Amino acid sequence: GENVEQHPSTLSVQEGDSAVIKCTYSDSASNYFPWYKQELGKRPQLIIDIRSNVGEKKDQRIAVTLNKTAKHFSLHITETQPEDSAVYFCAASNAYSGAGSYQLTFGKGTKLSVIP
Amino acid sequence: DTAVSQTPKYLVTQMGNDKSIKCEQNLGHDTMYWYKQDSKKFLKIMFSYNNKELIINETVPNRFSPKSPDKAHLNLHINSLELGDSAVYFCASSPGRAETQYFGPGTRLLVL
Image 1 (tube, chains in turn cyan, red):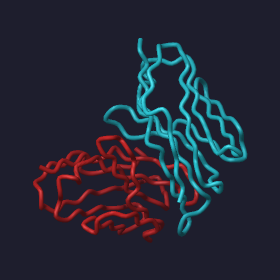
Image 2: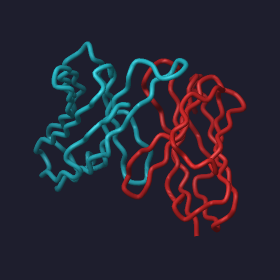
Image 3: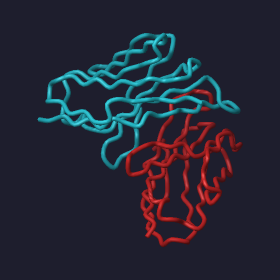
């Protein structure tokens, strides 16, 4: 099955600096890579995703890059703000798992702390 | 409000008891999931149903039994609760073959 490794497990940055979180995956058939943000005591929420036919995607201060050859993808947050402090999860899914559904395999999460 | 909802939000119970958690989604999605998030924050898939059919059944003690009465509901029943079952349980749904999953608010289970 798929295996997703995520690094680092914790990350502290000064407000205004950039943060980068990296993930690698094992299944070359994986074709969908979402990122979730989980604030303390809240549910994981999708913040950005990328499909395997695209190398980069941006949404304001966040961007995701994908290198299919190396089987890794990264989340980039620029101009970090205190409200970016949360646990971030990467995930990968293959095209099909059972009858008409994708199984997401999550990384173990990165706790990002933005220091004011 | 369109959403994934769970009840109860908090559940405190004694070892050995049986409890249920309910999940409902009104997003019209075909697929629903149960995840367990332990104190280390790792999200572990437990079960998944697609149109009421069980399609993912990870290595989970058979004390855990999911049930999907219709595609908008997925319940989780836990028998003979143990201390190690203490965790946050998240329900999620996705629009069938699309990959994006939407999570419920979580049920915080504490077994004493």
